[in-house]
Image (cartoon, protein in one colour):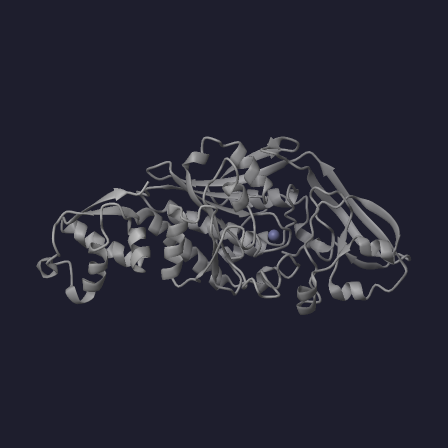
Length: 444
Ligand SMILES: [Zn+2]
Protein backbone atom coordinates (compact mmCIF):
# COMPACT_ATOMS: atom_id res chain seq x y z
CA UNK A 1 0.00 0.00 0.00
CA UNK A 2 1.36 3.41 -0.88
CA UNK A 3 1.03 6.38 1.41
CA UNK A 4 -1.29 8.18 -0.98
CA UNK A 5 -3.77 5.29 -1.02
CA UNK A 6 -3.88 5.24 2.78
CA UNK A 7 -4.83 8.83 3.36
CA UNK A 8 -7.21 10.10 5.96
CA UNK A 9 -10.80 9.31 5.19
CA UNK A 10 -10.07 5.71 4.23
CA UNK A 11 -11.94 3.18 6.32
CA UNK A 12 -12.79 -0.53 6.32
CA UNK A 13 -9.20 -1.57 5.83
CA UNK A 14 -8.64 -5.29 5.84
CA UNK A 15 -5.72 -7.13 7.35
CA UNK A 16 -4.93 -10.22 5.25
CA UNK A 17 -4.02 -12.28 8.34
CA UNK A 18 -2.26 -11.82 11.69
CA UNK A 19 1.26 -12.32 10.33
CA UNK A 20 3.19 -9.54 12.01
CA UNK A 21 4.99 -8.29 8.88
CA UNK A 22 1.82 -8.39 6.78
CA UNK A 23 -0.07 -6.36 9.41
CA UNK A 24 2.82 -3.92 9.75
CA UNK A 25 2.92 -3.20 6.02
CA UNK A 26 -0.81 -2.39 5.92
CA UNK A 27 -0.95 -0.29 9.10
CA UNK A 28 2.37 1.58 9.18
CA UNK A 29 1.66 3.90 6.19
CA UNK A 30 -1.67 5.10 7.62
CA UNK A 31 -2.22 8.70 8.65
CA UNK A 32 -2.55 7.79 12.33
CA UNK A 33 -2.85 11.16 14.04
CA UNK A 34 -4.10 11.46 17.65
CA UNK A 35 -7.81 11.67 16.80
CA UNK A 36 -8.16 10.95 13.12
CA UNK A 37 -9.78 8.74 10.49
CA UNK A 38 -6.42 7.04 9.84
CA UNK A 39 -6.08 6.09 13.52
CA UNK A 40 -9.67 4.78 13.63
CA UNK A 41 -9.14 2.75 10.44
CA UNK A 42 -6.03 1.13 11.93
CA UNK A 43 -7.81 0.28 15.20
CA UNK A 44 -10.88 -1.09 13.38
CA UNK A 45 -8.62 -3.26 11.20
CA UNK A 46 -6.93 -4.70 14.31
CA UNK A 47 -10.31 -5.21 16.01
CA UNK A 48 -11.39 -7.35 13.05
CA UNK A 49 -8.54 -9.78 13.81
CA UNK A 50 -8.23 -9.67 17.62
CA UNK A 51 -10.98 -9.98 20.28
CA UNK A 52 -10.97 -6.31 21.14
CA UNK A 53 -13.33 -3.95 22.91
CA UNK A 54 -13.12 -0.36 21.63
CA UNK A 55 -13.79 2.51 24.05
CA UNK A 56 -14.60 5.96 22.61
CA UNK A 57 -14.10 9.20 24.58
CA UNK A 58 -15.66 12.20 22.79
CA UNK A 59 -13.93 15.48 22.03
CA UNK A 60 -14.21 18.00 24.86
CA UNK A 61 -14.72 15.63 27.80
CA UNK A 62 -12.32 15.64 30.73
CA UNK A 63 -9.92 12.83 31.52
CA UNK A 64 -8.29 13.66 34.86
CA UNK A 65 -6.84 17.15 34.18
CA UNK A 66 -6.74 16.54 30.39
CA UNK A 67 -9.33 17.42 27.76
CA UNK A 68 -9.99 15.17 24.76
CA UNK A 69 -8.81 17.04 21.63
CA UNK A 70 -10.62 17.49 18.35
CA UNK A 71 -10.39 15.23 15.34
CA UNK A 72 -7.89 16.57 12.84
CA UNK A 73 -8.13 16.19 9.07
CA UNK A 74 -5.66 17.44 6.47
CA UNK A 75 -6.94 17.43 2.91
CA UNK A 76 -3.90 19.07 1.39
CA UNK A 77 -0.58 20.62 2.47
CA UNK A 78 2.02 21.92 0.06
CA UNK A 79 4.88 24.32 -0.42
CA UNK A 80 5.03 25.91 -3.87
CA UNK A 81 6.99 28.46 -5.82
CA UNK A 82 5.21 31.72 -6.62
CA UNK A 83 4.41 30.44 -10.11
CA UNK A 84 2.65 27.37 -8.68
CA UNK A 85 5.39 24.72 -9.02
CA UNK A 86 5.18 22.16 -6.22
CA UNK A 87 8.30 21.95 -4.03
CA UNK A 88 6.90 19.28 -1.70
CA UNK A 89 3.50 18.20 -0.42
CA UNK A 90 1.77 15.82 1.96
CA UNK A 91 0.93 13.76 -1.13
CA UNK A 92 4.65 12.88 -1.29
CA UNK A 93 4.88 12.09 2.42
CA UNK A 94 2.39 12.44 5.29
CA UNK A 95 5.02 14.04 7.50
CA UNK A 96 5.44 17.14 5.34
CA UNK A 97 2.73 18.81 7.45
CA UNK A 98 2.84 19.34 11.24
CA UNK A 99 0.30 17.07 12.94
CA UNK A 100 -2.61 19.27 14.12
CA UNK A 101 -1.39 22.24 12.02
CA UNK A 102 -3.82 25.13 11.68
CA UNK A 103 -5.03 25.79 8.13
CA UNK A 104 -3.04 28.44 6.30
CA UNK A 105 -2.91 29.78 2.80
CA UNK A 106 -0.74 32.60 1.60
CA UNK A 107 2.51 34.00 0.30
CA UNK A 108 5.34 34.15 2.82
CA UNK A 109 8.91 35.41 2.89
CA UNK A 110 11.65 32.82 3.32
CA UNK A 111 12.21 34.16 6.82
CA UNK A 112 8.56 33.65 7.76
CA UNK A 113 8.51 30.21 6.13
CA UNK A 114 11.60 29.13 8.07
CA UNK A 115 9.85 30.13 11.34
CA UNK A 116 7.21 27.50 10.51
CA UNK A 117 9.39 24.91 8.72
CA UNK A 118 10.79 21.99 10.72
CA UNK A 119 13.78 19.74 9.94
CA UNK A 120 15.31 16.92 12.04
CA UNK A 121 17.84 17.84 14.76
CA UNK A 122 21.46 18.17 13.62
CA UNK A 123 22.93 14.68 14.32
CA UNK A 124 19.99 12.89 12.66
CA UNK A 125 19.93 15.34 9.73
CA UNK A 126 23.64 14.78 9.07
CA UNK A 127 23.21 10.99 9.15
CA UNK A 128 19.94 11.03 7.18
CA UNK A 129 19.77 14.21 5.04
CA UNK A 130 16.56 12.99 3.36
CA UNK A 131 14.65 12.30 6.59
CA UNK A 132 11.49 14.36 7.16
CA UNK A 133 10.75 14.91 10.87
CA UNK A 134 7.51 14.00 12.66
CA UNK A 135 6.40 17.19 14.39
CA UNK A 136 3.14 17.61 16.32
CA UNK A 137 1.51 20.61 17.96
CA UNK A 138 -1.56 19.24 19.69
CA UNK A 139 -2.09 22.04 22.16
CA UNK A 140 -0.12 25.13 20.98
CA UNK A 141 -2.00 26.10 17.87
CA UNK A 142 0.16 27.10 14.91
CA UNK A 143 0.63 26.21 11.27
CA UNK A 144 3.69 24.31 10.13
CA UNK A 145 5.41 22.28 7.44
CA UNK A 146 8.29 19.80 7.66
CA UNK A 147 11.00 18.78 5.21
CA UNK A 148 14.41 17.14 5.03
CA UNK A 149 17.67 18.99 5.61
CA UNK A 150 18.47 18.54 1.91
CA UNK A 151 15.13 20.07 0.84
CA UNK A 152 15.55 23.04 3.17
CA UNK A 153 19.07 23.74 1.88
CA UNK A 154 17.62 24.09 -1.64
CA UNK A 155 15.13 26.82 -0.60
CA UNK A 156 17.00 29.88 -1.91
CA UNK A 157 14.11 32.01 -3.27
CA UNK A 158 12.89 35.04 -1.31
CA UNK A 159 9.16 34.17 -1.28
CA UNK A 160 6.98 31.03 -1.37
CA UNK A 161 3.36 29.99 -1.46
CA UNK A 162 1.97 27.83 1.37
CA UNK A 163 -1.31 25.88 1.20
CA UNK A 164 -2.49 23.91 4.25
CA UNK A 165 -6.12 22.80 4.03
CA UNK A 166 -6.73 21.30 7.46
CA UNK A 167 -9.87 21.13 9.60
CA UNK A 168 -10.82 20.46 13.22
CA UNK A 169 -14.08 18.78 14.22
CA UNK A 170 -15.69 16.76 17.00
CA UNK A 171 -14.37 13.21 17.19
CA UNK A 172 -13.33 10.71 19.84
CA UNK A 173 -10.19 9.27 21.34
CA UNK A 174 -10.40 5.50 20.73
CA UNK A 175 -8.80 2.91 23.00
CA UNK A 176 -8.66 -0.79 22.08
CA UNK A 177 -8.64 -3.26 24.98
CA UNK A 178 -7.87 -6.98 24.72
CA UNK A 179 -8.50 -8.83 27.99
CA UNK A 180 -7.17 -12.33 28.60
CA UNK A 181 -9.01 -13.53 31.68
CA UNK A 182 -7.26 -15.63 34.28
CA UNK A 183 -8.45 -17.12 37.57
CA UNK A 184 -7.90 -13.81 39.34
CA UNK A 185 -8.81 -10.23 38.48
CA UNK A 186 -5.29 -9.17 39.49
CA UNK A 187 -3.87 -8.06 36.20
CA UNK A 188 -0.69 -7.22 34.31
CA UNK A 189 -1.32 -4.46 31.78
CA UNK A 190 0.58 -4.06 28.50
CA UNK A 191 0.23 -0.80 26.64
CA UNK A 192 1.37 0.72 23.34
CA UNK A 193 0.38 3.67 21.22
CA UNK A 194 -1.08 3.48 17.75
CA UNK A 195 -0.70 7.15 16.85
CA UNK A 196 2.35 8.45 14.90
CA UNK A 197 1.47 8.75 11.18
CA UNK A 198 3.54 6.77 8.69
CA UNK A 199 5.90 5.34 11.33
CA UNK A 200 6.51 1.80 12.51
CA UNK A 201 8.98 1.32 15.33
CA UNK A 202 7.66 4.15 17.47
CA UNK A 203 4.26 2.87 18.56
CA UNK A 204 3.09 0.28 16.07
CA UNK A 205 5.89 -2.24 16.77
CA UNK A 206 4.75 -2.31 20.42
CA UNK A 207 1.07 -2.62 19.43
CA UNK A 208 1.77 -5.67 17.27
CA UNK A 209 4.11 -7.28 19.84
CA UNK A 210 1.45 -6.90 22.55
CA UNK A 211 -1.32 -8.28 20.36
CA UNK A 212 0.76 -11.29 19.30
CA UNK A 213 1.44 -11.92 22.99
CA UNK A 214 -2.30 -11.90 23.78
CA UNK A 215 -2.85 -14.31 20.87
CA UNK A 216 -0.46 -16.75 22.58
CA UNK A 217 -2.04 -16.19 26.01
CA UNK A 218 -5.59 -16.78 24.69
CA UNK A 219 -4.49 -20.32 23.79
CA UNK A 220 -3.46 -21.07 27.39
CA UNK A 221 -5.83 -22.41 29.99
CA UNK A 222 -5.51 -22.01 33.75
CA UNK A 223 -3.75 -18.64 33.75
CA UNK A 224 -3.50 -17.46 37.34
CA UNK A 225 -3.57 -13.73 36.53
CA UNK A 226 -5.44 -11.70 33.93
CA UNK A 227 -3.63 -9.80 31.17
CA UNK A 228 -4.74 -6.64 29.40
CA UNK A 229 -3.38 -5.10 26.21
CA UNK A 230 -4.33 -1.45 25.70
CA UNK A 231 -3.90 0.23 22.32
CA UNK A 232 -4.28 3.98 22.49
CA UNK A 233 -3.17 7.41 21.31
CA UNK A 234 -0.24 8.55 23.42
CA UNK A 235 -0.90 10.08 26.88
CA UNK A 236 -4.49 11.23 26.29
CA UNK A 237 -5.54 7.62 25.61
CA UNK A 238 -4.18 6.48 28.99
CA UNK A 239 -5.78 9.44 30.75
CA UNK A 240 -9.14 8.57 29.16
CA UNK A 241 -9.03 4.84 29.91
CA UNK A 242 -7.73 5.16 33.49
CA UNK A 243 -10.11 7.98 34.44
CA UNK A 244 -13.08 5.95 33.18
CA UNK A 245 -12.03 2.65 34.80
CA UNK A 246 -11.35 3.57 38.44
CA UNK A 247 -12.51 0.13 39.64
CA UNK A 248 -9.86 -1.62 37.55
CA UNK A 249 -6.92 0.48 38.80
CA UNK A 250 -6.43 -1.48 42.09
CA UNK A 251 -6.26 -4.71 40.04
CA UNK A 252 -3.26 -3.48 38.01
CA UNK A 253 -0.36 -5.19 39.78
CA UNK A 254 2.24 -4.33 37.17
CA UNK A 255 2.59 -3.14 33.61
CA UNK A 256 4.85 -2.80 30.61
CA UNK A 257 4.76 -0.07 28.02
CA UNK A 258 5.98 -1.52 24.71
CA UNK A 259 7.71 0.40 21.94
CA UNK A 260 10.58 0.54 19.46
CA UNK A 261 10.96 -3.25 19.65
CA UNK A 262 12.05 -3.72 16.04
CA UNK A 263 15.29 -1.71 16.08
CA UNK A 264 18.74 -3.31 15.96
CA UNK A 265 19.48 -2.50 19.62
CA UNK A 266 19.26 -4.81 22.65
CA UNK A 267 16.39 -4.43 25.11
CA UNK A 268 16.30 -1.65 27.67
CA UNK A 269 14.08 -1.97 30.72
CA UNK A 270 13.02 1.35 32.19
CA UNK A 271 11.74 0.73 35.69
CA UNK A 272 8.48 1.95 37.15
CA UNK A 273 8.28 4.58 39.86
CA UNK A 274 8.33 1.64 42.32
CA UNK A 275 11.57 -0.09 41.26
CA UNK A 276 11.32 -2.69 44.04
CA UNK A 277 7.78 -3.72 43.07
CA UNK A 278 7.08 -7.41 42.50
CA UNK A 279 6.64 -6.90 38.76
CA UNK A 280 9.71 -4.64 38.34
CA UNK A 281 11.85 -7.31 39.98
CA UNK A 282 10.36 -10.10 37.88
CA UNK A 283 11.19 -8.18 34.69
CA UNK A 284 14.77 -7.60 35.88
CA UNK A 285 15.36 -11.28 36.62
CA UNK A 286 13.85 -12.48 33.34
CA UNK A 287 15.79 -10.00 31.21
CA UNK A 288 19.03 -10.87 32.95
CA UNK A 289 18.63 -14.59 32.39
CA UNK A 290 17.28 -14.34 28.87
CA UNK A 291 20.46 -12.37 28.17
CA UNK A 292 18.06 -10.06 26.42
CA UNK A 293 19.85 -6.85 27.27
CA UNK A 294 20.90 -5.80 30.70
CA UNK A 295 20.42 -2.07 30.65
CA UNK A 296 18.16 -1.29 33.57
CA UNK A 297 17.37 2.41 33.66
CA UNK A 298 15.44 4.25 36.37
CA UNK A 299 11.93 5.64 35.96
CA UNK A 300 11.95 8.75 33.68
CA UNK A 301 15.46 7.75 32.49
CA UNK A 302 14.71 6.92 28.83
CA UNK A 303 11.96 7.46 26.23
CA UNK A 304 8.82 8.61 28.04
CA UNK A 305 5.35 7.44 27.12
CA UNK A 306 2.14 6.30 28.80
CA UNK A 307 3.98 4.66 31.70
CA UNK A 308 4.04 8.24 33.07
CA UNK A 309 0.23 8.27 33.36
CA UNK A 310 0.07 4.77 34.91
CA UNK A 311 2.73 5.64 37.51
CA UNK A 312 1.22 9.05 38.25
CA UNK A 313 -0.51 10.55 41.29
CA UNK A 314 -3.46 8.54 42.52
CA UNK A 315 -2.88 5.60 40.13
CA UNK A 316 0.56 4.29 41.05
CA UNK A 317 0.49 1.20 38.87
CA UNK A 318 4.11 0.00 38.63
CA UNK A 319 4.37 0.17 34.84
CA UNK A 320 7.86 -0.35 33.40
CA UNK A 321 8.80 0.25 29.78
CA UNK A 322 10.42 -2.25 27.43
CA UNK A 323 12.16 -0.87 24.36
CA UNK A 324 15.18 -1.29 22.12
CA UNK A 325 17.13 1.97 22.00
CA UNK A 326 20.74 3.14 21.64
CA UNK A 327 22.79 3.97 24.74
CA UNK A 328 21.83 7.38 26.11
CA UNK A 329 25.32 8.72 25.32
CA UNK A 330 24.84 8.02 21.60
CA UNK A 331 24.27 11.13 19.40
CA UNK A 332 21.49 9.28 17.58
CA UNK A 333 19.63 8.21 20.73
CA UNK A 334 17.04 6.75 20.79
CA UNK A 335 17.67 5.53 17.20
CA UNK A 336 18.65 7.14 13.92
CA UNK A 337 15.20 7.15 12.29
CA UNK A 338 13.23 8.16 15.43
CA UNK A 339 10.36 10.57 14.69
CA UNK A 340 11.19 10.71 10.98
CA UNK A 341 9.88 9.51 7.64
CA UNK A 342 12.56 6.77 7.72
CA UNK A 343 10.96 4.97 10.68
CA UNK A 344 9.27 2.53 8.29
CA UNK A 345 8.94 -1.25 7.95
CA UNK A 346 11.79 -1.40 5.43
CA UNK A 347 14.19 -0.17 8.14
CA UNK A 348 12.81 -2.42 10.86
CA UNK A 349 14.32 -5.60 12.29
CA UNK A 350 11.41 -8.07 12.41
CA UNK A 351 13.60 -10.87 13.79
CA UNK A 352 14.26 -8.70 16.84
CA UNK A 353 10.53 -8.01 17.15
CA UNK A 354 9.86 -11.77 17.31
CA UNK A 355 12.53 -12.13 19.99
CA UNK A 356 10.82 -9.37 21.98
CA UNK A 357 7.50 -11.27 21.83
CA UNK A 358 9.29 -14.40 23.12
CA UNK A 359 10.75 -12.30 25.94
CA UNK A 360 7.30 -10.94 26.84
CA UNK A 361 6.00 -14.50 27.01
CA UNK A 362 8.86 -15.39 29.37
CA UNK A 363 7.92 -12.44 31.60
CA UNK A 364 4.35 -13.81 31.67
CA UNK A 365 5.72 -17.30 32.42
CA UNK A 366 7.65 -15.92 35.39
CA UNK A 367 4.61 -13.92 36.57
CA UNK A 368 2.50 -17.08 36.49
CA UNK A 369 5.14 -19.28 38.13
CA UNK A 370 6.34 -17.03 40.93
CA UNK A 371 5.28 -18.25 44.36
CA UNK A 372 6.62 -18.65 47.88
CA UNK A 373 7.91 -22.21 48.43
CA UNK A 374 7.81 -23.67 51.95
CA UNK A 375 10.04 -26.67 52.86
CA UNK A 376 8.41 -29.68 54.50
CA UNK A 377 11.62 -31.36 55.71
CA UNK A 378 14.38 -30.66 58.19
CA UNK A 379 18.15 -30.90 57.90
CA UNK A 380 20.17 -31.14 54.71
CA UNK A 381 18.31 -33.02 52.04
CA UNK A 382 19.53 -36.55 51.13
CA UNK A 383 19.39 -35.92 47.37
CA UNK A 384 20.19 -39.47 46.22
CA UNK A 385 17.05 -40.80 47.88
CA UNK A 386 14.76 -38.97 45.42
CA UNK A 387 14.48 -40.37 41.89
CA UNK A 388 13.58 -37.07 40.24
CA UNK A 389 16.77 -35.36 41.42
CA UNK A 390 20.20 -35.85 39.89
CA UNK A 391 23.03 -34.87 42.23
CA UNK A 392 25.43 -34.02 39.38
CA UNK A 393 22.90 -31.87 37.58
CA UNK A 394 20.89 -30.41 40.45
CA UNK A 395 23.28 -30.34 43.42
CA UNK A 396 24.42 -26.72 43.08
CA UNK A 397 21.03 -25.15 42.35
CA UNK A 398 19.45 -27.33 45.04
CA UNK A 399 21.85 -25.98 47.65
CA UNK A 400 21.11 -22.42 46.53
CA UNK A 401 17.37 -23.07 46.80
CA UNK A 402 17.32 -25.00 50.06
CA UNK A 403 19.52 -22.52 51.91
CA UNK A 404 17.39 -19.58 50.66
CA UNK A 405 13.89 -20.99 51.23
CA UNK A 406 12.49 -19.54 54.44
CA UNK A 407 8.76 -19.61 53.78
CA UNK A 408 8.84 -15.88 52.95
CA UNK A 409 11.09 -15.60 49.90
CA UNK A 410 9.51 -16.11 46.49
CA UNK A 411 11.22 -17.82 43.56
CA UNK A 412 12.01 -14.33 42.29
CA UNK A 413 13.57 -13.35 45.62
CA UNK A 414 15.74 -16.48 45.55
CA UNK A 415 16.76 -15.85 41.92
CA UNK A 416 17.88 -12.33 42.86
CA UNK A 417 19.55 -13.37 46.10
CA UNK A 418 21.58 -16.15 44.47
CA UNK A 419 21.94 -14.56 41.02
CA UNK A 420 20.36 -17.77 39.70
CA UNK A 421 18.03 -18.53 36.78
CA UNK A 422 14.35 -18.16 37.76
CA UNK A 423 13.24 -21.01 35.49
CA UNK A 424 15.99 -23.34 36.72
CA UNK A 425 14.81 -22.76 40.30
CA UNK A 426 11.23 -23.39 39.18
CA UNK A 427 12.24 -26.69 37.51
CA UNK A 428 13.87 -28.04 40.67
CA UNK A 429 11.02 -26.79 42.90
CA UNK A 430 8.55 -28.67 40.68
CA UNK A 431 10.53 -31.89 41.32
CA UNK A 432 10.56 -31.21 45.07
CA UNK A 433 6.78 -30.63 44.95
CA UNK A 434 6.26 -33.93 43.12
CA UNK A 435 8.26 -35.65 45.85
CA UNK A 436 6.01 -34.01 48.47
CA UNK A 437 8.87 -31.94 49.88
CA UNK A 438 7.51 -28.40 49.36
CA UNK A 439 4.23 -26.53 49.28
CA UNK A 440 3.61 -23.23 47.46
CA UNK A 441 1.81 -20.02 48.30
CA UNK A 442 0.86 -17.39 45.75
CA UNK A 443 2.82 -14.12 45.86
CA UNK A 444 -0.16 -11.74 45.71
ZN1 LIG B 1 7.02 9.19 19.58
